Image 1 (cartoon, helix red, strand yellow):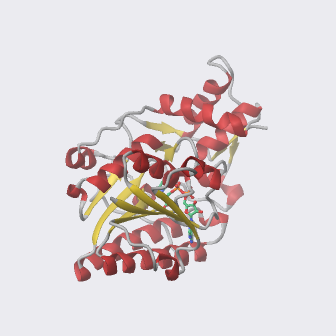
Image 2 (spheres, rainbow, N blue to C red):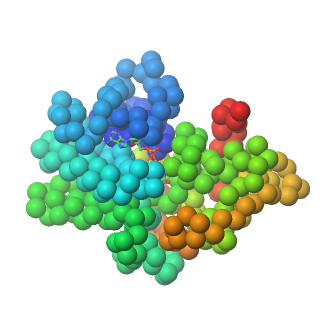
Image 3 (cartoon, rainbow, N blue to C red):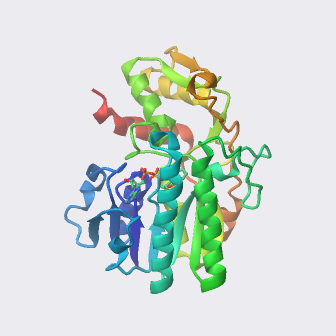
Length: 322
Ligand SMILES: NC(=O)c1ccc[n+]([C@@H]2O[C@H](COP(=O)([O-])OP(=O)(O)OC[C@H]3O[C@@H](n4cnc5c(N)ncnc54)[C@H](O)[C@@H]3O)[C@@H](O)[C@H]2O)c1
């Protein structure tokens, strides 16, 4: 297949491109390098089945001359506090609109990267694909990201209804691993790993009892490959997460990372930062996926548990510690 990946120089995009090329697919990758890195694409140097186009997906002209069987749309503005909520709302919409129009014109399928954040404050754990999406007030800008993805999902389904757009939507639950962004943009793992290596206190937002269910990137990529290669994924939404029992509090994640880096008897240094000191940030207290649908429809089984995945990630990140 010929597959176009937007956001290819980012974390998930570069890992996915590698796997698809290994499997014999042809890949065209696009990125404006705002949050991605060419170092993530070094492995493509001598691979003629890969072509990189640098540019902004919000500009429709960039898509003009490429035709693919499927567009995996990963490019996104994520955390609004890195730029602003307006950019998150506007850029995510513009990019998606361009990709959707292109897919309709070329009769290509879209694989859209959504997020577990769309479940928002829903307290009913675990989340299945039909669970309610519970957002906070529109005056709180952190919801702009989840909202842009919710809008994106509805926009895709509406285009399916009106124009027969073929789609799959994946809601990722905290993916981590090699090539991840080394700042909070990439989630807590990389920031915690750096602090642990430097023997500096790890900042924990709130009291650290908020939980997440993390997914090692190989499992995320396996799920995406299944969505690309298996037609049973057509016009479906899938939670994309890890093994049952993977829920962990942020405090325990920090402790686990500290011990994996500094030895099991090392006492972690944790620095708790009250939400009141960063704009009363509205955190989500628990996030656990039900991945039954993904497993039963696409024959998917997550392979990695957290400790295993963290060991590989820690080893990879060592090269960046100064
Ligand atoms: N990593 C996760 O745990 C996670 C969780 C939930 C959802 N997601 C979603 O998965 C997708 C990929 O996430 P990631 O962690 O790999 O993010 P990432 O930031 O590492 O990669 C996204 C890439 O898109 C590029 N990009 C952004 N705006 C662009 C634009 N206008 N034009 C061209 N390129 C642009 C960035 O430069 C970056 O390389 C995103 O849509 C994200 O919202 C990721």
